[in-house]
Image 1 (tube, rainbow, N blue to C red):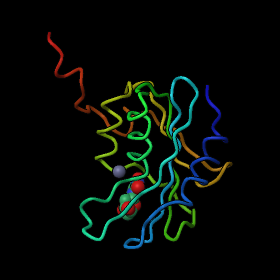
Image 2 (cartoon, rainbow, N blue to C red):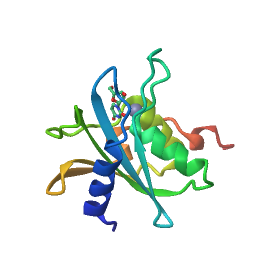
Image 3 (cartoon, helix red, strand yellow):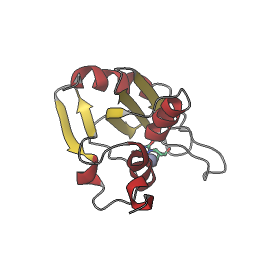
Image 4 (cartoon, helix red, strand yellow):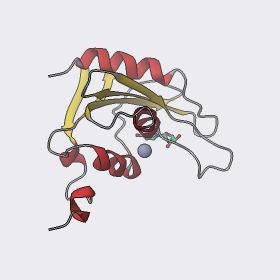
Length: 139
Ligand SMILES: O=c1ccn([C@H]2C[C@H](O)[C@@H](CO)O2)c(=O)[nH]1
Ligand SMILES: [Zn+2]
């Protein structure tokens, strides 16, 4: 399996760097690659709003731009002012990015409030019948 509590800790740490002056909603992510490396990400907002980037995509893009494209799991935490009381689930755009690089039946998405309060889903559970690279493959 994978170190759930360590990923939660790393997601919480990543949330510290969230740049969210417009929504005040801070999010942290910790993405576990197949080779064991963890890529942290936070949300990064923008005065023009549209360029806002979610914590999950920050983590994915850090990994992919470092040459890493195989992943096991991602942990996500988030809350208003960084106060963690409820699960924060990935937005549709981030689910689509996960679909690009991850096997939907195997990739694990950990939604956490703290180290003792978390739920684990597969990408397929959160993104059923997703469109991905396999749909474009020659048949
Ligand atoms: O799973 C999520 C949900 C929201 N956000 C960010 C986007 C925006 O900066 C703020 C409010 O939507 O939270 C994430 O980073 N990940
Ligand atoms: Zn998102």
